[in-house]
Length: 304
Image (cartoon, rainbow, N blue to C red):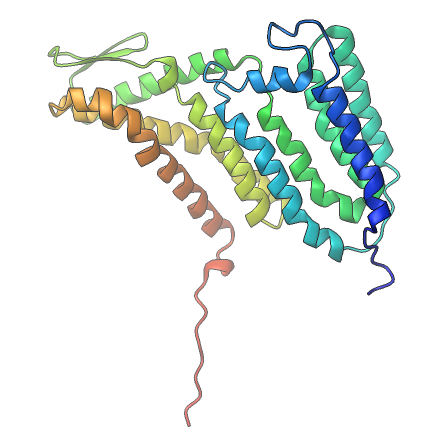
């Protein structure tokens, strides 16, 4: 073994286990308040109870399992890295502790949950060194996708207005006789009438796609700027995909299939149209950013 490499001995797992137990106690057992917005007295229970359809956070249930999968996938590259200093991990841990204290004093659970990745990442960097610990940065900060986002309802309203107006102008542009009032679009001949409700705003799909884009960017792109571009593409792809979903509902209704469009197609169009289109967009962008990686290898055969 290379002298510069540092394998983790059995005794080396002791501080990692102790840190895990401490975090588990203060986030999952310790009562930070007698009542956190009516959703439990410790941070983990508050977070889990927020993973519901009202908060558009059902994908939160996948985060713990993905966190463990990402940590497991990081084991191999960690073993291959050389020993390095990680003293500044203590500074990162201190910042996470300050967020936890601020959360306890103000009874704002989000502050402590925002600080959780800093505690995980800082501890990893201090114990393993920067070169090894950096592989756990993405798994640590992936926990942010499990935290309810304040102000999401206001974003829902903006997305409702956007998709309603976009579908209205697109429909009239192709010759459909439509009337738009608020978040309602209906046929001028009274054949059908649809309301673009909160569930059709696309915010649920947007949050899930942002999480998928983060995973795709991290594991497929090497340069930092490419990771940023792929991650940032989640918003326009989500808007376009949701527009296509809602617009096809209007087209089907205009063709006389309003019952099918409002029921079966509405319920399954997200899986049939939105996510395939959005994932295809990520793949196309990946090809544009990395054309050499997708070039076919031409075999050169020598003539006898």
